[in-house]
Image (cartoon, rainbow, N blue to C red; front, side):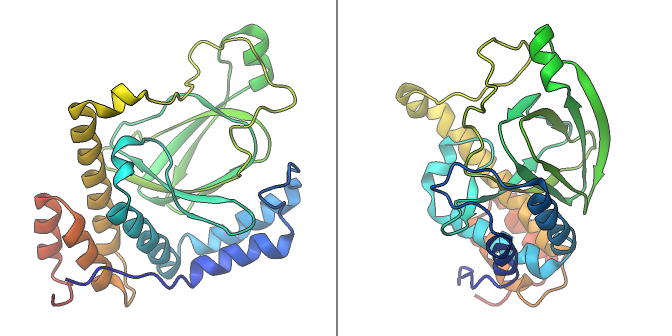
Length: 263
């Protein structure tokens, strides 16, 4: 059975936009101006509703899921592609029904797009939250498929899938995200999620491996469902890859889709 290979074309177009706008290189500490971020956001608004672009991204993601066994141990946004020289990471977010990571902080710019289904996002007044040492809600908005949002400076927000179906999002992440900003607050903020590295012992627990593998299977299944709704030439090839990598449930789904290339 042939696994998808990935000559990325539409994804290259997005990479070219970053290059042409003059985004800082990965080894530079500078942050891009807001106008540059808005320029990429505008381009992504067109790209994210283009099945050719999304299929490029999914092809990269499936390659990562197929050959990176360490993904079983990791949670959160795991890059499927990093733009050369700039260090900008591209990653998918997978959202089970009612799922949320909770309020968390981005320390520099990010651009996010909803690819499938919907999300809702709550933002918080970062300055007041740290001053009062409690989360102070600021805005709340709906994000249907095709919606593209951005963060241009340190912020706290909490995306959530409030629906009964799974959602898929795409994230373009600065290589500086996670660095301490100039106004870094050393006080603890109750309710703010702060990721931590798992210890070697935690990573060695059999349950962690089983749960990680289940998570990987759920991700592949959502990608298969997304691909099956597309109308681009590489759909059979992508579904064939989902068939090879997926769980028995995914294999049954792909068989029902009846668009898989012959093995």
